[in-house]
Every structure is written in structure tokens, then in C-alpha cells.
Length: 140
Image 1 (cartoon, one colour):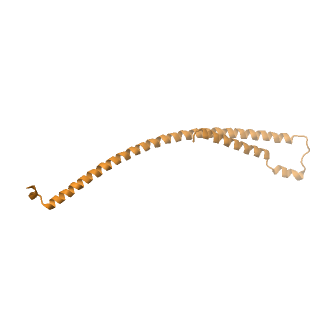
Image 2 (image 1 turned 30 degrees about the vertical axis):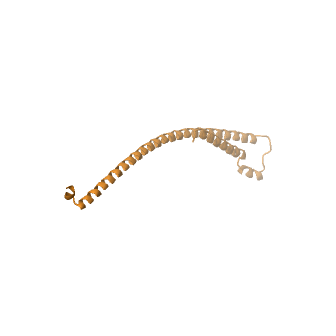
Image 3 (image 1 turned 180 degrees about the vertical axis):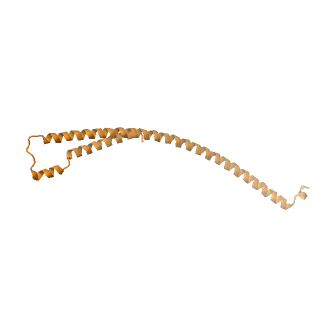
């Protein structure tokens, strides 16, 4: 009797609607499960990013402190070198040797203080090496 009440066209439509509903329900369940996994992944990733940012900030602060320390130490040592080589120059000019002739004095006055330049370069290299060693100890 049910066959008489429902036409074949209505049966086909009903089966199509039922299959569509089942497909839609399966799609929704799959999508919601994947979305939940993705949201969990995003939350974990943001927590890791915040933790890494705090580690990076602490490392940067530590390296800034090391850099300032090495820089001030370098400036102090460079100042001591300048003071030392200025004293050496004054001592060498106060010795009892004869003075330079007028033809060679202009040449000698224009020459840079090579000892001071070498000592400054060496001190710069030593300070750079100290900085590299200290920064490498921070684990960066």
C-alpha cells in the first residue's frame, strides 16, 4: 500500500536527499574533527612562539650586556694604549740625540705612529675574539 502512495519519482528524490544528508553529515564530522586538530595545533604553535620569543629576548639582553662590557673594556684598553704611546713619543723626543734636519722633519712629522696603529689593531682583534667567545657561551 505504501508503494501506491509514494510515486517512483518521489522515491528517487527521497533516496537522493537521504544520500545527500548522509554525505553532508560525514563531511561535517570530518571537517569538525580536522578543524579541532588544526585549532589545537595553532594553540600549541603559539605557545611555542611565545616561549621562543622570551628565550630570544633573554639571549639578546645577555648579549647586549656582554657587548657593552667588551666595548667599554676595549675603549679603556685603547685609551691606555694611546696614553702609553704618547708617553713613548714624549720620551723619545726628550732624548739627547740631535734634532732632525729641516729637510727630513716634514717627512717624519707626517708619518703616522705605526706602533700605535699596530697596537690598536691588535687590541681590536683581541677584543673581538673575547666578544665571540663570550657570545658563543650564551648558546646562540
